[in-house]
Image (tube, rainbow, N blue to C red; front, top):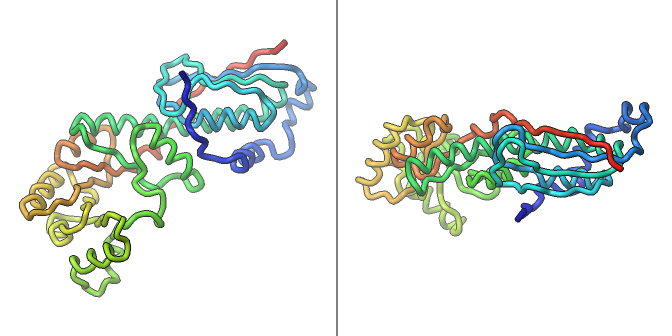
Length: 284
């Protein structure tokens, strides 16, 4: 049974994507005078993939006037030749939505598939390890990146600056050497429902900020993560250890085994798109 996921983009944003590709009509289809002929389009997975963005693709065809049917949903594993979506309409309508819809699914599925690979590797290292994708997405794609993370069984590290407390060295520069425990206490008073996350660059800095809820280790090796996790535990800290910087599918297992329970990564944003094959047919 297909369980479509909620749309990450509303109709206005999807219309903008369509208008970007067809700002003044489809010159080729109109010049050939085939735009009124009935047809059908089908989208298939050519690569193995975690499907993502297929609901948005279907809606794009509908916004152009087609009848669209989903055969897969975001979050589903799809083998090559899996039918993802089909739509029926006049040829002009199908050509209008074709490339934008295909490209959206390919890009989103690339991000989701790479995130799923990292998540799978992390769980081999520890069954409770969670991958969190950073907000270093291509500007303008945040909503789709969030959907891709969820489709992969991962999480977004932060969807933006408004929702989380993450103290960087660049923040601490302006604290006038305020005692770390006092700074953490102040954050908890101001935002009692939020966890306090502090990014550090070495073991000594981690111990200074050990009262935080999460200690984020920036560009630590797995060996350094293990050393830091042990030092925090010996100091009585209950902080969750997060590894950030350079985390990918090749080393996620090692980071999880070393004691990182949260693996923060930007790698999915740089994943190559997964190939979606498009097949047209004439209608009746």
